[in-house]
Amino acid sequence: MPRALITGITGQDGLYLGELLTAKGYEVFGLVRGQSNPKVAVVERVVPGVVLLEGDLTDLSSLIGAVEISQPDEVYNLGAISFVGLSWKQAELTGETTGMGVLRVLEALRIAGGNDMSGVRFYQASSSEMFGKVRETPQRESTPFHPRSPYGVAKTFGHYLTVNYRESYGAFACSGLLFNHESPRRGIEFVTRKISRAVARISLGLQDSLTLGNLESRRDWGFAGDYVDAMWRMLQQDAPDDYVVATGVTHSIRELLDAAFGRVGISDWSGLVKQDPRFFRPAEVDVLVGDPSKAREVLGWVPRVGFEELIAMMVDADVAVEAESTGKALTIR
Image (cartoon, rainbow, N blue to C red; front, side, top):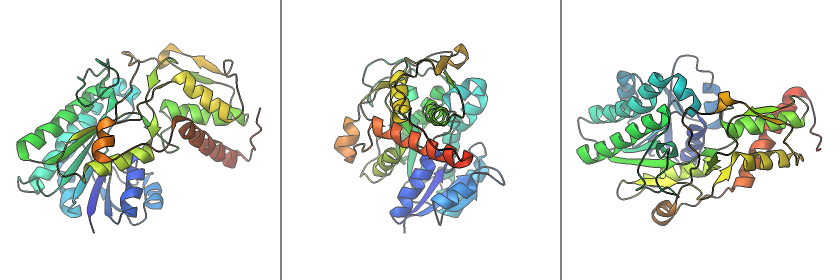
């Protein structure tokens, strides 16, 4: 039975990856931070049989301990301060967790292996935010980075560290340059889930409006459940490499609003959405769209869930949650 250690298992991607690996017959270990973590119950429900280990990406000794206990064949480093907006408010913590956390995980593998990193395959969750002020469109593995947030800078640091350990120690270390990937499990601070939850509540008469920032930003959105499959495929190859994981199609926030409100029968949302300068980024990333050709050709990976289906899935899930919690039924307008 193969063994896998997942940092960030309490997050959206960690849950989907834990499900995938369990279905494939892995023994799954998950790193959780802090005692009485409120998300532990969710992990244990979604990933039955998971072994949870206490540890923190800011504490090397706890990571070494987790590696020694789990003895993993594969390590997926998904843990991070992952909300871009928060990274300006907590830049130092973002650097320590999202950037230096990668170094600590790699060092834990090196130290636990006695300087031999050949026995463990490592996946690093890189990000399309590393491209930032893009130099070419679409973005591919060779596109230069120009991150526009502390989060993007930290992810770039972690990405290059992964490459460095691959070249310096012969580590089987891969980075997935994942573009935006969403699901009903996405945190409500992210714009996709903020919209789907607000649309659900508006449709049920629980709130009157939604306040957002830049409606013209364009992103390449896919389904998180599809993207974790790409992570796994990277670690099954004969040689380590880096891959862009994306749909290759871009949509604006306005298009996202069209799809979300349309799902509940509201065709004109103009009077329901407000804009507030507080929600604009200090340095905006206007357009991100990836070229997944390499992932398709080498990994055999293709996204299965399209944009409209993804947004419908998220809105439906939030309508069900809000309706159950309030006892209200949805009336299509």
